[in-house]
Length: 329
Image (cartoon, rainbow, N blue to C red):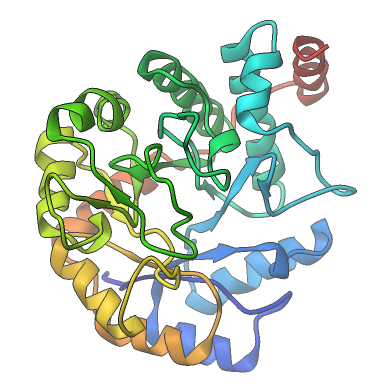
């Protein structure tokens, strides 16, 4: 069975009649949720169940639950976390704390029907990294970032949640917020390979990845990685990532043109899936038409990823919470 090469975000707390009709007709690969979709655990379980019932299958449901600033599920119903970079610096055992953080997050996600988390981040932090991203990252050198990202992915997988590796091929040098404008990175190819790309090479076995809306002038001075055939070749051949590759949100202002133009360019460049997040009906229609059906290669990658979506290991969550808290005191 094939699906639309798209992931969509519903507009509100419940699936509308229009969304039911549209999602049934277009059959997106999966869905992504944001704060606008979240109220209480019971409401969220109903929403995730209704989304899957609409498609008649166990569709993947994604969220950005990094902890810290980027955390869609928040108190009082869910635990609050430090920004990742702060936690790495504060913990007495940073890698164990990182694993526990994401094992606990996975438990919270699975309890409400969410089974894909847009983490880990393998971007390397610099002093000049834009503030929208910097304290979300895990470290300022490649070995630290790789180890912490691996701990994150392992914690999610142990809890039955698929990790999404982002932002391929590296967002750490960006001096602009790609939600608002197009960052341009001017480092040369050797510098990029040694720092920006290296963590993604080390983590290339992870099942799903998300692209960066960034121009790397040394390799393609005209197009952001998401819509650049040159950069997609770097991702697949130089970095060696052969997992399911989705765009970052197509509605971010780093990209130019209509939603149709953006989706067409991303698929042509080599992305497997288009991520569209804002729930706007007209834009979702444009994306569905332009993205088309998933390719055979994308379906193969998707099936490999979904095969890793297994029931969580049985664990004493209260004991993990106590251990996690002790590492941060």
